Image 1 (cartoon, helix red, strand yellow):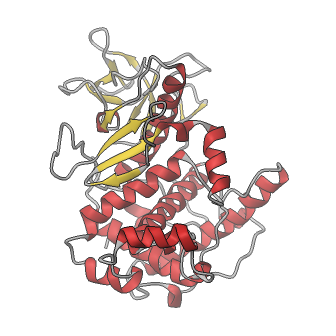
Image 2 (cartoon, one colour; image 1 turned 45 degrees about the vertical axis):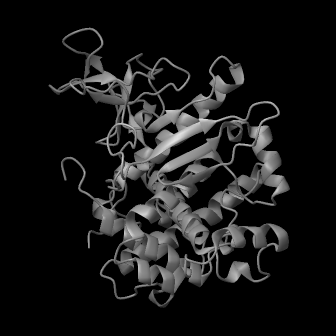
Length: 383
């Protein structure tokens, strides 16, 4: 099986300990200044910037052969900006100049946006699309299938509706059904989202977290439902044929089981096997992206004073998998990193960066997600 460190998105080094690091969210302009994932202009040299999703790179741009086209210095390929560059979405992604579509691979996934005549909706939409681009960039880097249900794959693709309830109208519920992910745009309002988080006694609630959770439901349908992974899934997560509506009612009426933390990554994961999968999937994406970012900025575990009891092969779902040791290195590095980041957050009087504890059953589930992802990967351009 393709190993995580050599092939996944070119985000990781071949080891967490003391090897050369391939960047993830660490980029530099041609002038040498650090630039970041969402940047469309270098504040150092005023070069326009764009994100190349197929290469997971933010690059400085030079004018192309005609106005509206761009090229990367020392390259001949020409690109165009996403049509959402100068909208509230502020998308800095690039497309090949000859692509017949005007929207980039991330923006073309959106089917419905809120009324932009409302200033709040304009702000919400920009924040939401920024979080969605971070999600999509990671999914592409992992080699997972990402196609628009609107324009590219009407049977198996994914699409997003970003909705806001009308005054006096029904609530908009965030969720997934048959490849459609619906998000209540008021989740982009920090005050409202924090109020919901507090009311529901959640330790963590973010837009990116919502996206990672809901896309987990989509990939369960896509990668597990009718695959070789279905029966192993049932053995580890439980039988998803259990009444979902009844499970939700029981959760909201009685709460999670008292010992949920011994088996699940979150209390909500205990609701139903589908929710356990989606929560575990989201945490796998948290882990890979956060650790990849740390590696990209040159952080090595040997620089850290934190020590935690490491998980071992006995804690894994598949301890004999050829990639098991590398997976353990990733996981144990993540635990050490979050110990330090949690203390840094506390030093600033902020909530923990990662307010979760992984039990051994959760570790097995996270490795299961990893195996499904690795099995589903398609090679990136140039691999």
